[in-house]
Length: 226
Image (cartoon, rainbow, N blue to C red):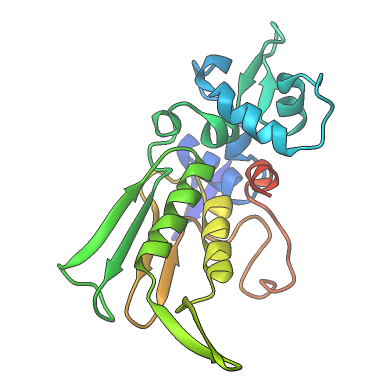
């Protein structure tokens, strides 16, 4: 494989080639199995809680369900099931051991821009746990507003909580976990909310077809979070 650099055509380094394959959706990071990862690295309570939400027969084996969902892959040769990055992020005992950058930093600033005075919370754990912690942070730090509905006053948040939750779920579900140099940022300002998720537009999605194209960078994570 070769890449163009200015007026030169040079062989692509392995790291750059892998990055291109991931960016274009040819190789999906979430489906890779990290070295040394085993079923013991999954939290059985979290797996059981997830399966309990699904309408499966009670005698259905958890390993079979996780295999169907793409959370496990059978090892070549031995045929033993091993967890993928997706499984470790969703159900792992220590998700950040395998993907250190899979965290979220939530911050509340007092003004309309960044300042040296702010309230912050570092959020880690599995992806569902991060979403729960982030929603708790929002409930504690979003301002309340009072609206007159009919003859009664109703107190609500300054932003629809359902909309902000959807922003967070999208940020967690669609970020590029192959990029290890950054994390998800949730910033609350006095006049807006900003959510930054690492990674560019995935696969065939570009600015021209953004509103029509459909492509999931992390289809397994999206399915489980759904």
